[in-house]
Amino acid sequence: MRRDAITRSRAALLLVLCGGLAAAAAQAQDQHNDRARARADVGRQHVDSRFNHNHAYPARGVVVHALPAQHYDVVFGGGHYFFAGGVWYAPRGGLFVVVAPPFGVFVPILPPFYTTIWVAGAPYYYADDVYYVYRGPVSGYEVVAPPPEQEVAGAPPPPGAGPAPGPAPVSHELFVYPKNGQSPDQQAKDQYECHTWASSQTGFDPTALNGGVPPQQAASKHADYNRAMGACLEARGYTVR
Picture 1 (cartoon, rainbow, N blue to C red):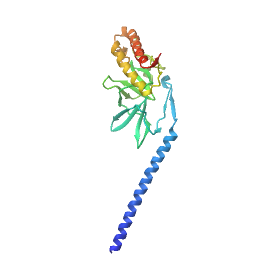
Picture 2 (cartoon, one colour):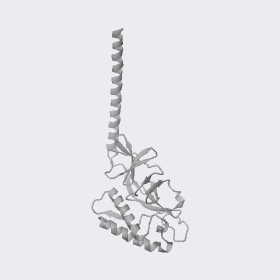
Picture 3 (cartoon, helix red, strand yellow):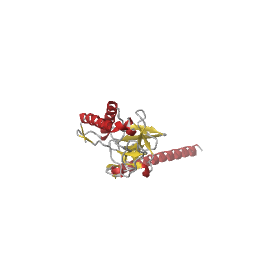
Picture 4 (tube, rainbow, N blue to C red):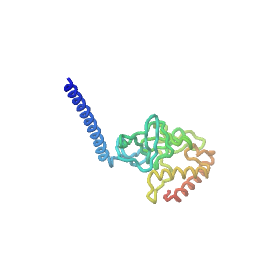
């Protein structure tokens, strides 16, 4: 009887050990597959040409080994996301996968490359199939659902007019190019800080309708804002056109 009990105990222990080894092997295989996929994903990109945006991003579903050095951690709806250079990532084991962000999540800055469109007279900001709306200096920019295409306009409505229809939105007036090898995330940070400074100096906020000033002042104030923004960015090592 005792010998049978010992035999059964050894058999049970052997089963546990085998099960543990099998689980460890399966986990190792999954990690190997994820890393192999990450290697295969290198270079997988798509060019976002919507609204003449014309900028390349990693394709959704691409797996990467590491995040860009400068990124933002975002916790929303019980999920954890990372935002860098206009690209959204979610953790996947020890790796990261490119994903679409959930509607309602906030980030403090816009992507370094974005296109401004106008919807019912209000500015939206577009990059990599994602739409952002400015919610104020505290909240930042909210990811929102795509607006109806028939409501999208290429320019702000003229003073005193209603929403301006049109199918060809244009990019932000200032085109910024790094001269000193600044990373996209550093450029985004510099643009946001220069925007905050230029807006405080001129009283004009391009993220608000008519810049937050009386319609008759919008054109001149916008020009003042652009000059201030350009001066700030040039002082930080960018070419501005």
